[in-house]
Image 1 (tube, rainbow, N blue to C red):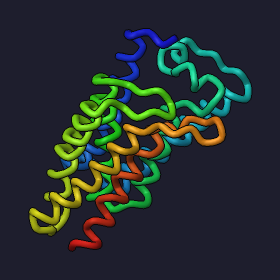
Image 2 (cartoon, helix red, strand yellow):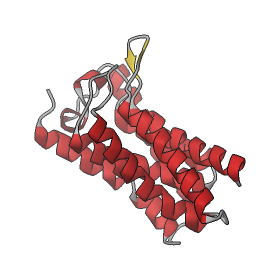
Image 3 (spheres, helix red, strand yellow):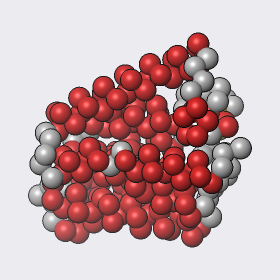
Length: 201
């Protein structure tokens, strides 16, 4: 069973993923560079997972950062990198960056407030807090990266935050596999923002 100390380490590692999109927002790296960096990270993570699952690599760090249900499945960190890479390569920055921040920062906030078992929803208070955090992360990006009027930007950011909140708050099990929110939050949020702006813009 994962210890509280391990959970804290997991959340700190999780939050460190915000560094790249923040560097992009600050103008320190280009959007293309951010995509390349995430792609390299995905290749590395995929390679490590292949070795862990197929060869049996058993580094101590895995004991600290991998949950019990991930022992026989692809671990959350690899799904995290894959989903970040996917939105970086396929979505526009105004939609992708909020999704990245919702996963890197919003998800750990939600996790600290309360977790849920696979197949069950989180408590209402945790869901509300996750939505508020995601909206706060998304709105400044949508406002600064688009020419949408404020009301449209708020609606789009809210759509992305709602999509991310649902992805975080519900953890379905498909064919015995837990659909990890590390995989679903960024694309859900990015799609919500993009669709809302297309419909309202």
